Image 1: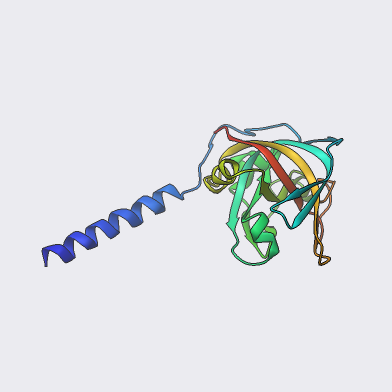
Image 2: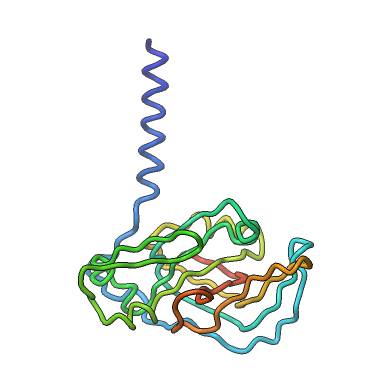
Length: 198
């Protein structure tokens, strides 16, 4: 009986630990925690092979400091082999708790969704200051850091917006605009530097 109680207590403690560890980080009263727009510049990086079977073509250099609005892990498909985690990112007004508290944000099927009862800011400001990003880690330490992120973290990462292809014709191509919406509007980022700031 004592062993069962001990096991139950351990499981309860473990469950609480993971629940507590997964709670979103709040930044109440701080307003916009980052006002920087993502920076995109022409890239001179050469095409290269990745994980033997993929060819990565850099389209632009990319640097962003933004708030994690949502995090989603994926386990199936070609994409999950390259980018097992998508981060929905927000900057400017979309990094402000006052705005985000009035939005319902979710991710599924490699998309980022938001909804609200009434707009806390104009719709185009929501759409142009947030994006869903597929993150391909350059190495294992970067992948571990990405997987360790919590919703609400302020993060900085840099690398390249890319097209990834395979010899069988499969292709995954990044958007090159922060103002687009709908199909093809997500960023596919080959991440060379990743850091959690807050």
